[in-house]
Image (tube, rainbow, N blue to C red; front, side, top):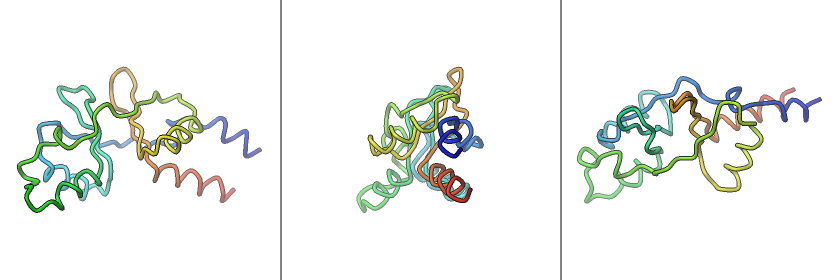
Length: 135
């Protein structure tokens, strides 16, 4: 029964749907505040409403740790990963998990009609795994 359930799970069943985004022209300091406030590690980056990248807490930490760089002067667009991996809400969860593991990426941005509707991260994946193992 469990393998059938796993094969039927879609990314929309496991994604974080209360997604926070950030503008490309804001600073890393702004991003760090947002991440801390909402206890999140990934922010889809928008420019004029269009997805242009994703910023991770690791991106912020690496740049913030460099003493010669001031996070209040560095723009999100200069630190983000461009061309984030996107999937649709009906993408099978197993396909997303396999791709993330093989590509060693920490998140997928879930898009529908050119709008960000969710984010799926390794933390979401661990939550699904824990739920499945508890059954």
